[in-house]
Length: 414
Image (cartoon, rainbow, N blue to C red):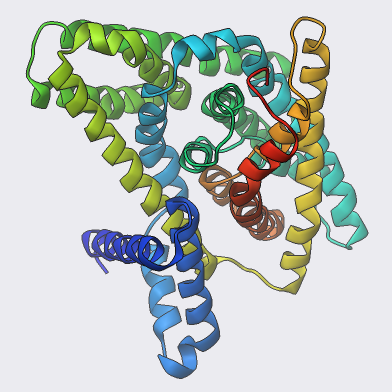
């Protein structure tokens, strides 16, 4: 199957899943289309060889032509992060900058260490031979709360605005930090060598360099947009910022995700009104809202279909089930410590640690990172276990986060 044919098939299936969900199921689009795609995958696995002989093999062969990891990390993520950041309230984000900064940096490291250590102990108890270094890699894979999942699910969850800002702000920034942690740990696990000075340089180059690069991109685009009033060209400029800027960041070894978030925040909010006429601002908003919705739906259909390619046996399924409470425990530690320290300086609403813990959704980024782990015995355990955690997170946590927040009495102090 040619790549264009595969893209056409995926978009067609996505449209069918979205229609079925909105017509008959009524779940949030991201969760609904993923569950339908999961159902399609399970049907092919369970009945494909009897009802439709060869259907499952054909589907596997077609999906194998698509590099999910590259499609997400080097393609969709740039558009989704920019679109998400474009509509975030910058003033609300700045007001909670210390909480968001702590969760997106220290929280990621705590989550990586705690989840990796607990996973190593749990796997050893199950008789699975996964080295400690690769368990730390697994911790990094599952450390970031996924901005795509968070933005797609929280829109209609009824979470207080203050709490939503924290969860969304953290998710926009922590994936860039987690990717750097992941790259460092994969190199260390593969080589058996750790260079602390090199790790520090890599963090500064990727994270700080990415933020400064994003500021520069946003500033250039803002001044270009101010010089004209032609919405087609203005949309083209933002597309060039995302596509060209992300590619250039990658070439310069800077964090593309952080650059896109910073550029989106800079172009959104007050600057969008200053640079664009009301008509052009509406066109730009509608365009990026549409891009966000379309790519979200496609991404979550791909997550559902990825089940066809996983080595998911009883052992791997058990490892995934054991990993669910491990990840929740690591998330609790990653949220609890920063919030406890910050309580000395600001007030939080009741239950905020438990709500932030439950609201830390895992999604496509974790699956993409797990898929990029080098082939080997560790990957054969880490990948399906990650997939189990992601599906649980999106369905169980995603569908209940609003009710959990209301039950725990979250308010605008959160």
